[in-house]
Image 1 (cartoon, rainbow over the protein chains, first blue to last red):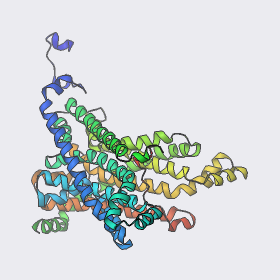
Image 2: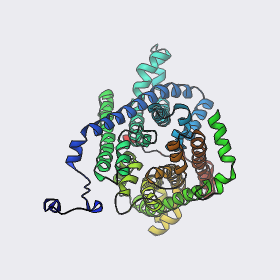
Image 3: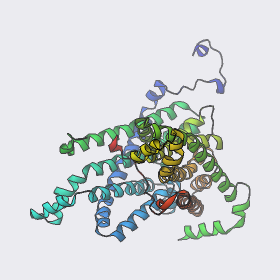
Image 4: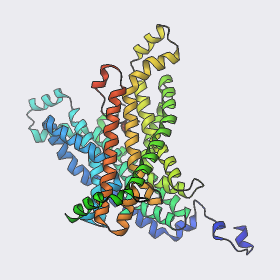
Length: 231
Length: 234
């Protein structure tokens, strides 16, 4: 800054390139907020859709060993496929759209969720189930009022892992142009290694993951008041 | 269907494999980066895990590290490295991937050591084994299945994330994928995606088999499922 004030000319390589620059954030607030909004949309839709698919799958997997083995090995295979390859598989069919990213993210979150949902449902003690049957509970009522509440802590553990990983993974969506904060990261890289957007977007990614994690942990506490006294 | 046809066609053209920066070059590059990164991570994480696991210290640190590392996007770290003196290219990629491979290896090996029955450790000591003997002859063999799960998780993750290096000017099998997106080339996207996915699956299968080979005793027939530390336990 002293150099600038003295009126000396600066070579591009000597130009100041700070990691954190309040003026960058101020000047580009619109871009950053739009990227953040897209990141939240990607994460929330992927986890919500993943949950809606994972719950019926877990219920189905519970019914027979064959189905659960098929679902678990299928999910291992999906989880092993690298994200960039997944987007490459989807690209010929869904093109450069936000759907490509969301479908890919849904598949990954689904894998984590279905395992945790299944583990949670299987961990419901048999005597609790029998007591519910003895009290006249049918299968649907037992699921909603006995099994799901008992499995909620495990459900939420899965939701937290899935959400945090999805926030990190969504950045890769930049390959089709919809990567939320990933767009800002790569733009900074392509823009002559401009550090301010890179550091800002990276920090926001971690903060967003943390915020989602805290939010889910708090909801889990609120929704399962009976488990509070233990730990 | 034409995209699949194009992909088959691309993979069947020998020139696409053998030319400079062709698929073979990229494959070798990808495997080299992944092997070095996993090796370096194991060389750092395993001694640390043995120390932590044997003494019972560092558990909170290990769990915190594995949780924090999940929240940091690999892409972000690769790009952050690119604008520091580490720079970009294959060396920077290897460092970033090694950093991300440390938490799974450390966590699984640590849990493997802690899950060794304390009675067995105590009786080993009572039989006159020195601490080093207890580690080498009792704890380590019993922790091998868990250690192998950690190595497998890390290796598969490294192979998968090595593709991201291409987004910041690196090589490996991600490069043809990035090119395919830039050129809107459906066939190439499918072909390169297939190769990366196949490589990741192959890594998984090979390391499952390797775990069977190195696990001593009848435990080889009952390998644990992938150990996953729940954030709930923190």
